[in-house]
Image 1: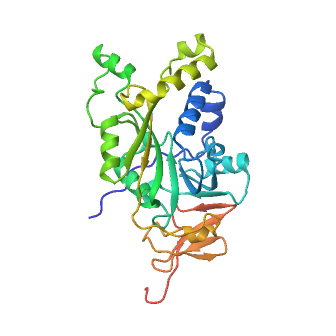
Image 2: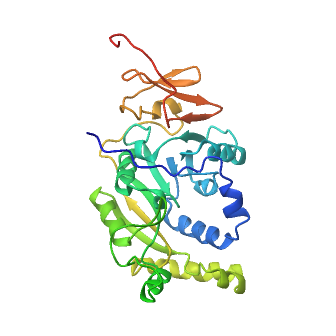
Image 3: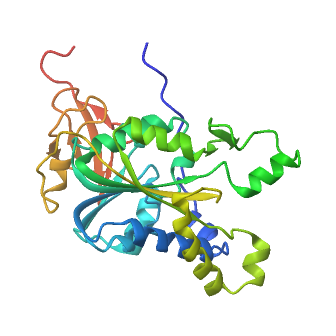
Amino acid sequence: MPAPEPPICSYEGSDYQSSFWERGGRDYEDQVEAIALRRLLPHGGGLLLELGAGAGRNTPRYEGFRRIVLLDFSRTQLEQAQARLGNSDRYIYVAADVYRLPFVDGLFDAATMIRVLHHMADAPRALRQIRDALKPDGVFILEFANKRNLKAILRYWLRLQKWNPFDAEPVEFAALNFDFHPGRVQSWLEALGLRVQRTLTVSHFRAQGLKKLVPLRLLVFMDSLLQPTGALWQYTPSVFIRARGGNPIARNVPADADPVSMFSCPACRTAPLKDATGSLVCSRCGAQWASTDGIFDFREPVTRVITAGQH
């Protein structure tokens, strides 16, 4: 029997962008993450996949890429991204499950996954999907929540928490919220042929007291100075990794190509899909995927088309 599908953490209907970022007092986290991205991103490229794009908070930071695919499981988050970024041909909006990415293999020059892995119940499976979507020498920038952070270590030593921050296994501290050990994440990437090139530690001063007492610019400056110590040790709540590698098969799909040529059926992996009015249709399994209001929706097929030979 096939393995059961991992559960999905959906932000459908959430005001996450405004409540968490814009009104949540997280200017410090946003700015230090922007610095980490600048340090790790290639100077430019063709096609970038932004996994867990949400409302497009980070999307403007990928200015060196000719085209960006924003992928999120939540359609309402993508609608917020559309309102923020517009319907330019530079942006392709895709509602999909990271465990079943709807792309042809070896498509993307780069991919980013920021503040998303901590919702993955089966992280290796998600990472394998991303590896397959990258070109052979693609760049993957991954952020993950670090279980071996100083706060967790102190709480463990004071017996205020039961789970061991030094244990390599992920810890689910709340429903579909996971912290990961840096060594385990690196081993997953290396097993997939993704070579870790650089590691940055981020959010060294993520504490409400510090953020209230110390000026924002000073906190951001100090964090910027400390980020490169990630090459030596990782004890911050957030860790950024730049890895290189991908699918040995590269697709020669230009960044400015018709988006339909980039997709494969997530149900049976068939490509290309047929462009019908308001949907994309798989010629093999008959799955029909919605395409409305500028968003390609691959979460669930809207219908299954009956083809010759099916009864």
